[in-house]
Image 1 (spheres, rainbow, N blue to C red):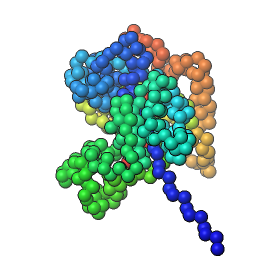
Image 2: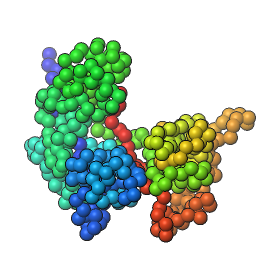
Image 3: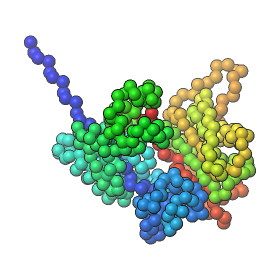
Image 4: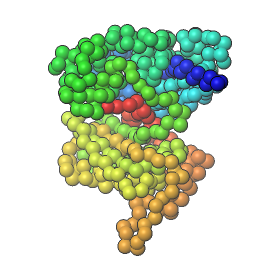
Amino acid sequence: MTPSPSPEPARTRRILLVDCDAFYVQVARLEDPEGVGRTRLLIVGGSSSGRGVVTSASYAAREYGVRSAMPTARALRLCPRATVVPVPREACSRRSRAVRSALEELAPVVQAASIDEFYLDLTGTERLFRGETLEDTARRIRQEVLERTEVSVSIGGGTRRLIAKLATTEAKPAGVYIVPPGEEEAFLRTLDLAAIPGVGPALLASLKERGLVRVEDALQLQEEWLRRWFGERRGRWLWRRIRGLDDSEVDPDSRRKSISSERTFSRDLTEDHELERRLLELTGDLAATLRTKGFRARTVTVKLKDHRFRVRQHSRTLPEPVESDQAVTEVARALLHELREEERSATRLLGVGLSGLVDADTPVQLGLFSGEAAPVETERDRALSAARDQLRHRFGEGVVRPGRLLDGPSPGRRSSSPDPAEPEHPPDATLNEPDP
């Protein structure tokens, strides 16, 4: 009797996370090497008047306590000598594409987790790289990316995506940190629970109330206690998370979850027509980005932040996904009106988000009965948007604009008065980390 072949042993996964160091700061400096490039204390996001929110800050500015998502006014109180510049959105997208292109030549599987983070799966490449250690491979990739794109990156690595992400924090700035197979638990024991992705402020406060601050504290608990305290789903998720258990694959075709864009105004807006005009700018840009990426969206969200920093938002999920300027704008306008009817407070920030994304070639289901409500989006709407895209591509972004925007400065032209809105986030950020 011929013995059956023994199964091949499972290969140890080799995962890297490439994280661009202070990406928005880097890009701002690369785009203006003789000006911003020489500035040590740099804040990207908001304006020198203190309006807006910090998108990123140089490491020197961070030493003063400046952090991303902090109001720029507070950041300037902490670091009054800092220079503030707007987010260089187009340049960030271009540099991000360059980094991804370089990585795709250096690794077999690449997944963009966000505009400045990329997962690489190097499992089974030991022979391809002639026995090179994962640390040596990471250092070689880091140097290649720097030489090809001028962008400095930090790289963390391990046997799972979660471990690689946590290791990247240890690698910053401009370094490499690899957690060897079998040493995951020892590595995790050195961390605070606040370092675990997905453990937000509310969960962190609940853990602290129970005397749990470090991962090592929580590792001593049975899973049953975590489920009792935080519910079945979240308790189980936390039990696995603090042990570094993560089965997620590095997927180059990973679906984008959402796209969004926000504006913080240089003065609080109180009039509906002013807010609607700013809404038109946001929805037009977002819808164009949606089509460029080959998606349609099922859900539209509008967010307002008032002068007291309170945030309110409304969302609407549509029966069929949409992609046209007309459909996105009409739904967003209705949501804005709902928010304003609830409360007409002075508005500091306006944001629009598109989520529930599906491929643009997904068939649209037609109504079966003549009495059904009219669709949110028609073929004519999509055709008009496609025609606008062609004109913008050929003649520039400002060539086709809604009539209500014609009395203001065009996107590509500098106004004689200050631009009343500062972009907060480029409309291509992704959120692909698992959450509880």
